Image (cartoon, rainbow, N blue to C red; front, side, top):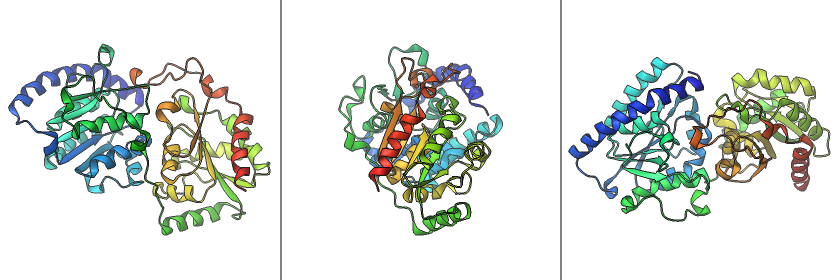
Length: 403
Protein backbone atom coordinates (compact mmCIF):
# COMPACT_ATOMS: atom_id res chain seq x y z
CA UNK A 1 0.00 0.00 0.00
CA UNK A 2 1.16 3.53 -0.70
CA UNK A 3 1.63 6.12 2.03
CA UNK A 4 -1.04 8.39 0.50
CA UNK A 5 -3.57 5.55 0.46
CA UNK A 6 -2.87 4.77 4.11
CA UNK A 7 -3.30 8.45 5.03
CA UNK A 8 -6.67 8.59 3.26
CA UNK A 9 -7.87 5.45 5.03
CA UNK A 10 -6.65 6.84 8.35
CA UNK A 11 -8.67 10.02 7.77
CA UNK A 12 -11.89 8.89 6.09
CA UNK A 13 -12.27 5.60 7.93
CA UNK A 14 -10.27 6.49 11.05
CA UNK A 15 -12.37 9.41 12.27
CA UNK A 16 -15.77 7.65 12.28
CA UNK A 17 -14.20 4.41 13.52
CA UNK A 18 -12.52 6.05 16.52
CA UNK A 19 -15.76 7.94 17.28
CA UNK A 20 -17.69 4.66 17.39
CA UNK A 21 -14.95 2.95 19.39
CA UNK A 22 -15.10 5.79 21.93
CA UNK A 23 -18.74 4.96 22.66
CA UNK A 24 -18.01 1.24 22.76
CA UNK A 25 -14.93 1.55 24.99
CA UNK A 26 -16.81 3.63 27.57
CA UNK A 27 -19.29 0.80 28.03
CA UNK A 28 -16.62 -1.90 28.07
CA UNK A 29 -14.45 -0.04 30.58
CA UNK A 30 -17.35 0.17 33.04
CA UNK A 31 -17.74 -3.59 32.90
CA UNK A 32 -14.06 -4.29 33.51
CA UNK A 33 -12.37 -4.39 36.87
CA UNK A 34 -10.14 -1.42 37.59
CA UNK A 35 -6.40 -2.07 37.34
CA UNK A 36 -3.80 -0.07 39.23
CA UNK A 37 -0.59 0.86 37.46
CA UNK A 38 1.18 -1.18 40.15
CA UNK A 39 -0.59 -4.35 39.00
CA UNK A 40 0.42 -4.05 35.33
CA UNK A 41 2.81 -6.80 34.30
CA UNK A 42 2.51 -6.90 30.49
CA UNK A 43 2.86 -3.74 28.39
CA UNK A 44 2.46 -3.42 24.63
CA UNK A 45 4.15 -0.64 22.62
CA UNK A 46 2.73 0.33 19.23
CA UNK A 47 5.04 1.92 16.65
CA UNK A 48 4.43 0.85 13.07
CA UNK A 49 5.79 3.16 10.47
CA UNK A 50 9.45 4.19 10.93
CA UNK A 51 12.58 2.14 11.67
CA UNK A 52 14.47 4.95 13.40
CA UNK A 53 11.68 5.34 15.96
CA UNK A 54 12.57 1.98 17.49
CA UNK A 55 15.98 3.43 18.40
CA UNK A 56 14.52 6.64 19.79
CA UNK A 57 12.07 4.62 21.87
CA UNK A 58 14.70 2.33 23.38
CA UNK A 59 15.32 4.36 26.58
CA UNK A 60 11.58 4.19 27.29
CA UNK A 61 11.46 0.48 26.46
CA UNK A 62 14.33 -0.23 28.85
CA UNK A 63 12.67 1.82 31.58
CA UNK A 64 9.46 -0.21 31.41
CA UNK A 65 11.28 -3.48 30.75
CA UNK A 66 13.04 -3.33 34.13
CA UNK A 67 9.80 -4.13 35.96
CA UNK A 68 7.38 -5.41 33.29
CA UNK A 69 7.30 -7.79 30.37
CA UNK A 70 7.25 -5.70 27.20
CA UNK A 71 5.71 -6.42 23.81
CA UNK A 72 5.88 -4.54 20.52
CA UNK A 73 3.85 -4.34 17.31
CA UNK A 74 5.52 -2.94 14.19
CA UNK A 75 5.22 -3.26 10.42
CA UNK A 76 7.13 -6.32 9.27
CA UNK A 77 9.33 -4.30 6.90
CA UNK A 78 10.58 -2.22 9.87
CA UNK A 79 10.92 -4.98 12.47
CA UNK A 80 14.66 -5.52 11.95
CA UNK A 81 15.34 -2.21 13.73
CA UNK A 82 14.25 -3.78 17.01
CA UNK A 83 17.09 -6.27 16.64
CA UNK A 84 19.80 -3.65 17.13
CA UNK A 85 19.28 -3.38 20.89
CA UNK A 86 17.23 -6.57 21.36
CA UNK A 87 15.41 -4.90 24.24
CA UNK A 88 12.16 -6.60 23.23
CA UNK A 89 12.33 -10.42 23.08
CA UNK A 90 11.75 -11.74 19.56
CA UNK A 91 8.81 -13.84 20.75
CA UNK A 92 7.11 -10.66 22.02
CA UNK A 93 7.20 -8.82 18.68
CA UNK A 94 4.18 -8.90 16.38
CA UNK A 95 5.16 -8.09 12.78
CA UNK A 96 2.22 -6.66 10.88
CA UNK A 97 2.18 -6.84 7.09
CA UNK A 98 1.19 -3.76 5.08
CA UNK A 99 1.98 -4.89 1.53
CA UNK A 100 -1.76 -4.89 0.68
CA UNK A 101 -5.03 -3.82 2.28
CA UNK A 102 -6.16 -7.46 2.54
CA UNK A 103 -3.03 -8.66 4.37
CA UNK A 104 -3.27 -5.67 6.70
CA UNK A 105 -6.88 -6.52 7.61
CA UNK A 106 -5.95 -10.17 8.15
CA UNK A 107 -3.04 -9.22 10.37
CA UNK A 108 -5.18 -6.85 12.42
CA UNK A 109 -7.37 -9.79 13.43
CA UNK A 110 -4.31 -11.95 14.05
CA UNK A 111 -2.89 -9.16 16.20
CA UNK A 112 -6.03 -8.84 18.32
CA UNK A 113 -5.97 -12.60 18.98
CA UNK A 114 -2.24 -12.33 19.83
CA UNK A 115 -3.01 -9.57 22.38
CA UNK A 116 -5.59 -11.74 24.15
CA UNK A 117 -3.25 -14.70 24.12
CA UNK A 118 -0.51 -12.62 25.78
CA UNK A 119 -2.96 -10.98 28.21
CA UNK A 120 -1.88 -7.42 27.43
CA UNK A 121 -2.84 -5.16 30.34
CA UNK A 122 -1.49 -1.80 29.15
CA UNK A 123 -0.78 -0.37 25.72
CA UNK A 124 1.41 2.62 24.88
CA UNK A 125 0.76 4.13 21.44
CA UNK A 126 3.98 5.80 20.25
CA UNK A 127 2.47 7.08 17.00
CA UNK A 128 1.61 10.78 16.93
CA UNK A 129 -2.14 11.14 16.32
CA UNK A 130 -2.68 8.11 14.08
CA UNK A 131 -6.32 7.00 14.14
CA UNK A 132 -5.34 3.51 13.04
CA UNK A 133 -3.12 2.90 16.07
CA UNK A 134 -5.70 4.55 18.34
CA UNK A 135 -8.23 2.00 17.09
CA UNK A 136 -5.75 -0.81 17.66
CA UNK A 137 -5.24 0.43 21.23
CA UNK A 138 -8.97 0.29 21.88
CA UNK A 139 -9.29 -3.22 20.47
CA UNK A 140 -6.34 -4.82 22.30
CA UNK A 141 -8.40 -5.44 25.41
CA UNK A 142 -5.91 -3.48 27.54
CA UNK A 143 -7.42 -1.73 30.54
CA UNK A 144 -4.76 0.99 30.54
CA UNK A 145 -4.28 2.85 27.23
CA UNK A 146 -1.67 5.58 26.96
CA UNK A 147 -0.92 7.85 24.01
CA UNK A 148 -0.37 11.40 22.80
CA UNK A 149 -3.06 14.01 22.69
CA UNK A 150 -3.26 17.73 22.02
CA UNK A 151 -6.16 19.40 23.85
CA UNK A 152 -8.35 21.83 21.90
CA UNK A 153 -7.06 20.55 18.55
CA UNK A 154 -10.17 19.16 16.90
CA UNK A 155 -8.35 18.58 13.60
CA UNK A 156 -6.31 15.87 15.29
CA UNK A 157 -9.41 14.03 16.51
CA UNK A 158 -8.98 10.33 17.11
CA UNK A 159 -11.66 9.68 19.69
CA UNK A 160 -11.47 9.57 23.46
CA UNK A 161 -10.01 6.08 23.67
CA UNK A 162 -7.06 6.77 25.96
CA UNK A 163 -7.29 6.23 29.70
CA UNK A 164 -4.09 8.28 30.12
CA UNK A 165 -3.82 11.02 27.47
CA UNK A 166 -0.32 12.50 27.59
CA UNK A 167 0.21 15.95 26.14
CA UNK A 168 2.47 15.94 23.09
CA UNK A 169 5.15 18.62 23.43
CA UNK A 170 6.51 19.86 20.06
CA UNK A 171 9.31 21.75 21.82
CA UNK A 172 11.19 18.80 23.32
CA UNK A 173 12.88 15.85 21.64
CA UNK A 174 10.59 13.00 20.57
CA UNK A 175 12.59 10.58 22.77
CA UNK A 176 11.60 12.66 25.82
CA UNK A 177 7.99 12.68 24.65
CA UNK A 178 8.14 8.89 24.48
CA UNK A 179 9.59 8.64 27.99
CA UNK A 180 6.69 10.83 29.15
CA UNK A 181 4.28 8.22 27.79
CA UNK A 182 5.67 5.66 30.24
CA UNK A 183 5.10 7.81 33.34
CA UNK A 184 1.52 6.63 33.99
CA UNK A 185 2.98 3.17 34.64
CA UNK A 186 5.04 4.58 37.51
CA UNK A 187 2.73 7.18 39.04
CA UNK A 188 -0.87 7.59 40.20
CA UNK A 189 -1.08 11.16 38.86
CA UNK A 190 -3.46 10.11 36.08
CA UNK A 191 -6.06 12.72 36.92
CA UNK A 192 -3.80 15.68 36.17
CA UNK A 193 -4.26 17.54 32.92
CA UNK A 194 -2.20 17.81 30.94
CA UNK A 195 0.18 14.97 31.71
CA UNK A 196 3.16 14.82 32.38
CA UNK A 197 4.05 17.60 34.83
CA UNK A 198 7.74 17.04 35.40
CA UNK A 199 11.08 17.69 33.73
CA UNK A 200 12.48 14.82 31.67
CA UNK A 201 16.26 15.09 31.78
CA UNK A 202 18.82 14.27 29.13
CA UNK A 203 20.01 11.40 31.32
CA UNK A 204 16.68 9.65 30.69
CA UNK A 205 17.25 9.31 26.95
CA UNK A 206 20.76 7.88 26.99
CA UNK A 207 21.36 4.95 24.64
CA UNK A 208 23.15 1.78 25.65
CA UNK A 209 26.11 1.35 23.29
CA UNK A 210 25.98 -1.72 21.07
CA UNK A 211 29.11 -3.84 20.55
CA UNK A 212 28.71 -5.97 17.41
CA UNK A 213 29.80 -9.62 17.66
CA UNK A 214 33.07 -10.71 16.01
CA UNK A 215 31.31 -12.93 13.46
CA UNK A 216 29.31 -9.92 12.27
CA UNK A 217 32.48 -7.81 11.93
CA UNK A 218 34.09 -10.66 9.97
CA UNK A 219 31.15 -10.79 7.55
CA UNK A 220 31.43 -7.05 6.97
CA UNK A 221 35.15 -7.26 6.22
CA UNK A 222 34.50 -10.13 3.83
CA UNK A 223 31.89 -8.08 1.96
CA UNK A 224 34.18 -5.04 1.80
CA UNK A 225 37.11 -7.08 0.46
CA UNK A 226 34.93 -8.18 -2.46
CA UNK A 227 34.29 -4.55 -3.45
CA UNK A 228 37.15 -2.35 -2.23
CA UNK A 229 40.60 -2.49 -3.85
CA UNK A 230 42.51 -0.84 -1.02
CA UNK A 231 41.12 -1.95 2.33
CA UNK A 232 43.98 -0.32 4.23
CA UNK A 233 42.27 3.07 3.93
CA UNK A 234 39.78 4.49 6.39
CA UNK A 235 36.10 4.22 5.50
CA UNK A 236 33.56 7.03 5.46
CA UNK A 237 29.92 6.09 4.89
CA UNK A 238 27.43 8.04 2.79
CA UNK A 239 23.71 7.28 2.78
CA UNK A 240 21.97 9.06 -0.11
CA UNK A 241 18.58 7.50 0.61
CA UNK A 242 15.67 8.49 2.82
CA UNK A 243 12.93 5.99 1.96
CA UNK A 244 9.64 6.61 0.20
CA UNK A 245 7.76 7.79 3.26
CA UNK A 246 9.14 11.34 3.00
CA UNK A 247 11.10 11.90 -0.23
CA UNK A 248 11.38 15.58 0.73
CA UNK A 249 14.14 14.53 3.18
CA UNK A 250 16.59 13.76 0.35
CA UNK A 251 19.55 16.04 -0.33
CA UNK A 252 19.99 16.26 -4.15
CA UNK A 253 22.17 13.53 -5.63
CA UNK A 254 24.23 16.19 -7.36
CA UNK A 255 25.07 17.68 -3.98
CA UNK A 256 26.09 14.27 -2.64
CA UNK A 257 28.29 13.72 -5.70
CA UNK A 258 30.02 17.07 -5.31
CA UNK A 259 30.62 16.39 -1.62
CA UNK A 260 32.04 12.91 -2.27
CA UNK A 261 34.39 14.15 -5.01
CA UNK A 262 35.78 16.79 -2.68
CA UNK A 263 36.22 14.26 0.10
CA UNK A 264 37.97 11.48 -1.85
CA UNK A 265 40.37 13.93 -3.50
CA UNK A 266 41.20 15.69 -0.23
CA UNK A 267 43.95 14.72 2.20
CA UNK A 268 41.46 12.93 4.48
CA UNK A 269 42.63 9.57 3.12
CA UNK A 270 39.25 7.85 3.10
CA UNK A 271 37.35 5.50 0.83
CA UNK A 272 33.67 6.37 0.63
CA UNK A 273 31.25 3.47 0.99
CA UNK A 274 27.74 4.12 -0.32
CA UNK A 275 25.17 2.29 1.78
CA UNK A 276 21.57 1.25 1.28
CA UNK A 277 19.15 -1.64 1.04
CA UNK A 278 19.06 -4.10 -1.91
CA UNK A 279 16.14 -2.26 -3.54
CA UNK A 280 18.07 1.04 -3.27
CA UNK A 281 21.13 -0.31 -5.06
CA UNK A 282 20.15 0.91 -8.59
CA UNK A 283 19.62 4.43 -7.30
CA UNK A 284 22.92 4.39 -5.39
CA UNK A 285 24.66 3.04 -8.49
CA UNK A 286 23.87 6.30 -10.29
CA UNK A 287 25.95 8.20 -7.74
CA UNK A 288 28.85 5.74 -7.90
CA UNK A 289 28.91 5.73 -11.70
CA UNK A 290 28.89 9.53 -11.90
CA UNK A 291 31.86 9.72 -9.52
CA UNK A 292 33.70 6.87 -11.28
CA UNK A 293 36.46 6.31 -8.73
CA UNK A 294 37.70 3.19 -6.97
CA UNK A 295 37.63 5.27 -3.79
CA UNK A 296 33.83 5.54 -3.98
CA UNK A 297 32.24 2.09 -3.75
CA UNK A 298 28.58 1.09 -3.74
CA UNK A 299 27.93 -1.59 -1.09
CA UNK A 300 24.13 -1.08 -1.00
CA UNK A 301 22.50 -4.46 -0.55
CA UNK A 302 25.78 -6.27 0.24
CA UNK A 303 25.13 -6.49 3.98
CA UNK A 304 22.38 -7.88 6.11
CA UNK A 305 20.59 -5.35 8.28
CA UNK A 306 21.89 -7.00 11.46
CA UNK A 307 25.46 -6.40 10.26
CA UNK A 308 25.05 -2.61 10.04
CA UNK A 309 26.34 -2.03 13.60
CA UNK A 310 29.51 -3.93 12.63
CA UNK A 311 29.94 -1.71 9.55
CA UNK A 312 29.50 1.38 11.70
CA UNK A 313 32.04 0.10 14.23
CA UNK A 314 34.85 -0.06 11.62
CA UNK A 315 34.05 3.27 9.96
CA UNK A 316 35.24 6.80 10.70
CA UNK A 317 31.94 8.58 10.22
CA UNK A 318 28.84 8.95 8.07
CA UNK A 319 26.92 11.58 6.12
CA UNK A 320 23.24 10.76 5.80
CA UNK A 321 19.85 12.18 5.04
CA UNK A 322 17.47 12.38 7.99
CA UNK A 323 16.51 8.70 8.06
CA UNK A 324 17.00 5.42 9.88
CA UNK A 325 20.80 5.01 9.41
CA UNK A 326 21.54 8.12 11.46
CA UNK A 327 19.71 6.55 14.41
CA UNK A 328 21.14 3.07 13.85
CA UNK A 329 24.66 4.55 13.88
CA UNK A 330 23.95 6.29 17.18
CA UNK A 331 23.52 2.87 18.77
CA UNK A 332 27.21 2.17 18.04
CA UNK A 333 28.40 5.73 18.68
CA UNK A 334 29.58 6.40 15.11
CA UNK A 335 30.02 10.09 14.35
CA UNK A 336 27.23 11.12 11.97
CA UNK A 337 26.47 14.27 10.03
CA UNK A 338 22.72 14.36 9.42
CA UNK A 339 21.05 16.53 6.78
CA UNK A 340 17.75 17.99 8.00
CA UNK A 341 15.19 19.94 6.00
CA UNK A 342 11.44 19.27 6.33
CA UNK A 343 11.93 18.03 9.91
CA UNK A 344 13.88 19.55 12.75
CA UNK A 345 16.89 18.05 14.57
CA UNK A 346 15.58 19.58 17.79
CA UNK A 347 12.89 16.88 17.82
CA UNK A 348 14.32 14.07 15.70
CA UNK A 349 18.11 14.29 15.93
CA UNK A 350 20.01 11.05 16.74
CA UNK A 351 20.66 10.60 20.44
CA UNK A 352 24.43 10.18 20.33
CA UNK A 353 27.46 11.70 18.53
CA UNK A 354 25.56 13.45 15.73
CA UNK A 355 26.03 16.85 14.08
CA UNK A 356 22.87 18.18 12.44
CA UNK A 357 23.21 20.14 9.21
CA UNK A 358 20.15 22.35 8.95
CA UNK A 359 19.50 25.53 6.96
CA UNK A 360 16.56 26.61 9.16
CA UNK A 361 14.34 28.15 6.46
CA UNK A 362 11.24 30.02 7.61
CA UNK A 363 9.03 27.23 6.23
CA UNK A 364 10.95 24.48 7.99
CA UNK A 365 9.95 22.20 9.59
CA UNK A 366 6.90 21.64 7.41
CA UNK A 367 6.57 18.01 8.51
CA UNK A 368 5.34 17.51 12.06
CA UNK A 369 2.88 15.66 14.23
CA UNK A 370 0.11 18.20 13.74
CA UNK A 371 -0.14 17.64 9.97
CA UNK A 372 0.35 13.88 10.25
CA UNK A 373 3.80 14.37 8.69
CA UNK A 374 2.19 15.17 5.34
CA UNK A 375 3.67 18.22 3.61
CA UNK A 376 2.46 19.79 0.33
CA UNK A 377 6.05 20.76 -0.54
CA UNK A 378 7.35 19.58 -3.92
CA UNK A 379 10.51 21.71 -3.91
CA UNK A 380 12.65 21.03 -0.83
CA UNK A 381 14.72 24.20 -0.89
CA UNK A 382 15.43 23.55 2.80
CA UNK A 383 17.90 20.89 1.61
CA UNK A 384 18.81 22.26 -1.81
CA UNK A 385 20.28 25.41 -0.25
CA UNK A 386 22.75 23.40 1.83
CA UNK A 387 26.07 23.88 0.07
CA UNK A 388 28.24 20.77 -0.54
CA UNK A 389 31.35 22.86 0.18
CA UNK A 390 30.12 23.76 3.66
CA UNK A 391 29.27 20.12 4.39
CA UNK A 392 32.70 19.03 3.13
CA UNK A 393 34.45 21.52 5.41
CA UNK A 394 32.68 20.15 8.49
CA UNK A 395 33.35 16.52 7.62
CA UNK A 396 36.93 17.16 6.51
CA UNK A 397 37.75 19.04 9.70
CA UNK A 398 36.43 16.12 11.75
CA UNK A 399 38.40 13.51 9.77
CA UNK A 400 41.65 15.49 9.92
CA UNK A 401 41.26 15.90 13.68
CA UNK A 402 41.31 12.08 13.98
CA UNK A 403 44.62 11.58 12.18
